[in-house]
Length: 145
Image (cartoon, rainbow, N blue to C red):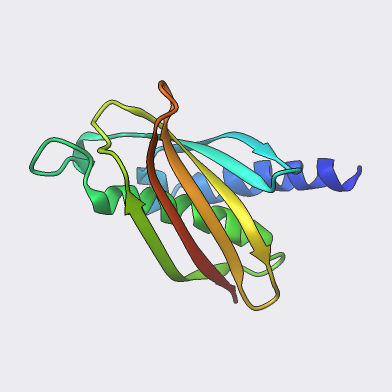
């Protein structure tokens, strides 16, 4: 198995593991699934289901739930990037560009910017899967434990 095939297999295995722990935790409640990945771009795309519990007082998806989408996706990618250890969030910044509505099909692509020994840098883009419109962007750092 070459490097590319090994990386894709790792993405698939770790995504399946972390997103389906069966513990009723946050990542499981986010209803996220792997859509695609690119070894060449060092990117991983996840689809999120918008849910009733994520609605804010105006009827859109709460900004905290959107941040949770980024943290869930970034966390999975950071954890397999960290190697045999797991990783923890050290900082994250999000910019909201358009509202996310309940029922919208959204996809979040994570790009590995730098995978260092002491810090993993990532950036991400949340888009409306039906229109391709950019909804939010984020970046952050994760520390391998």
